[in-house]
Amino acid sequence: MKFNNNIIVYGDISFRGDCPTESAEQMTFFNKLRREYPDTYGALAVHTRNEGRRNIRQADRHKAEGMTPGAADIIIPGEHTFVCELKRMDHTKCKWQPGQQEYLIAADKADCFACVALGWEAAWEAFRAWADQA
Image 1: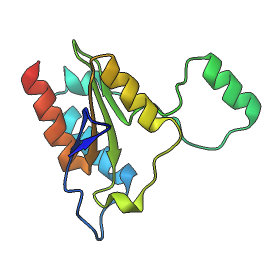
Image 2: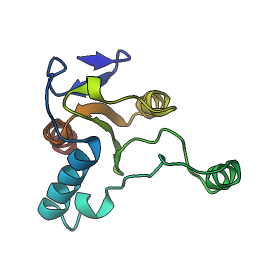
Image 3: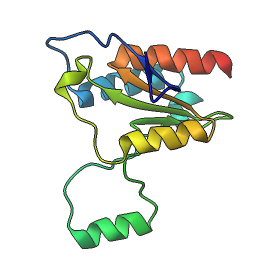
């Protein structure tokens, strides 16, 4: 399935049921990546923390310092950067945050490998598809 015509969704969009939280899925993905690729992809991969409560002054300062609302959960720089928004396996149990869809669309327009993954295994599948192209 594709999101916004160009962005591939990895994982089973019809899955409904118990599943780990987005945070747990993300930790599993990053742990595996850093274990298997400690000197390359694991050393480069980042998660930009965008969420959380802050007052207007803090938000303004963070924006001035370069924080981009909606930045994807997994970003790995490369010739074509890997940009992955990670959601729960049961995507009905999570919400899109402001700016996330726009960020993915902008990444796609900038020729990044932009995708949505439903769970860590889907994120790993997307990562392997990207890494095999590199």
